[in-house]
Image (cartoon, rainbow, N blue to C red; front, side, top):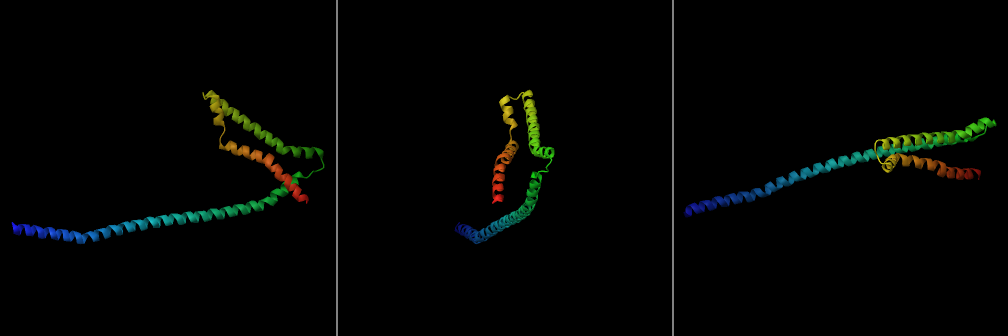
Amino acid sequence: MSILTSGIDALAGGVVGALARLAPEVLSILDKRNERKHEKEMTELNMKFEELRHQNAVDLKDLDIEQSRFAAAMPVLQSSIQAQAQQTGIKFIDALSATVRPVITYWLFFIYALVKVGIYSTYVNAGVAADQAMVALWGPEDTTMLSAVLTFWYVGRIWERDTVRDFRR
């Protein structure tokens, strides 16, 4: 039995020795695989970052172009407003010209209110509670439109008043 035991011991020692020599190689292979995977992920992230950076640069360029167009249009808009404000000397024409903006404003408000009443009526006829129908009528677009109207009639008027003062100086 001692020959058998020493043979098993030699065999076990050889297997353990081989495994001990292979373990660093296996770990090295696994480490390299993880390293390549990490490098691939980093490359993909860098590519996405570059795409976003490029898109941001394009968006900034588009914004600059739009800003330039707006700046170029401002003098034309100012001159058209000034030309419209000039009196012709014919009282009927001047009075009619002065009513264009308010009449259009009232007309659009009337149509808007009519549409909202129609939608409200549709909700109520469909069985929606009146308070829920009122809440459903008001959305982000309504808030935007209300802000635009209030800005035009109140903030815009203050800006125009202050602008007129600056021109007189």
